[in-house]
Length: 223
Image 1 (cartoon, rainbow, N blue to C red):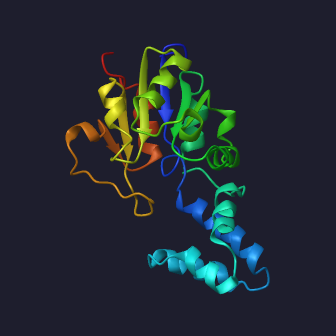
Image 2: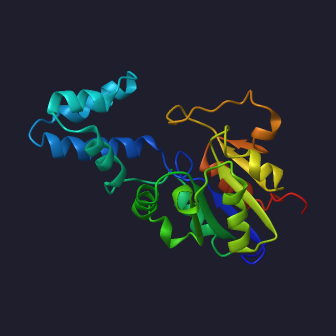
Image 3: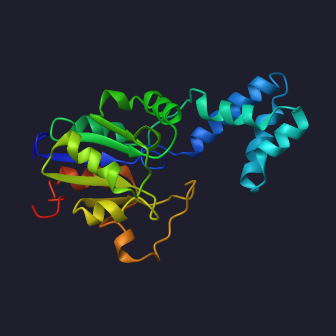
């Protein structure tokens, strides 16, 4: 397997890092802007989130801050994030053998801030963000763009969202790997969906993914 012929493509949120950490980072930023002395606001925001209450409605009414400002802070702040265990090791171990890409949905500034915070720009060859390309997963355009830019013979997509992540790469003949939710994912997984929505392989950690590639399993269909 060489970088000229094979690509590993990643989802971002809840695949390379826990997306809940972005929410916590944003809430921390917002609470420090609104109530820098009151250290209880952040904890209260987190508590309300896990109770499925509308956090921004509460903050808007209690602190007289317009919701549009809260959303702007949430989307544009520079977050403090860490990759899942073994992700960086995986990237270092296999960057000489594969091209790497990211396909992610979201706003450009939000997703690129995440990527920079995580240090992923050091490893990733191609980044496809829905706002920049004008379409969201499962649109064929997002995956097709990766094939155009990387020009590889085979592709593997590693992601987590059963509703939109796997149906298109499955159709395109990519190998798909689903990282199981450990209980913290923003979007819950539904494995009762039709087979075309489900990944070829399910794993529970990045160590498992690294082990699969380390054993040189033929992960790409048709090889």
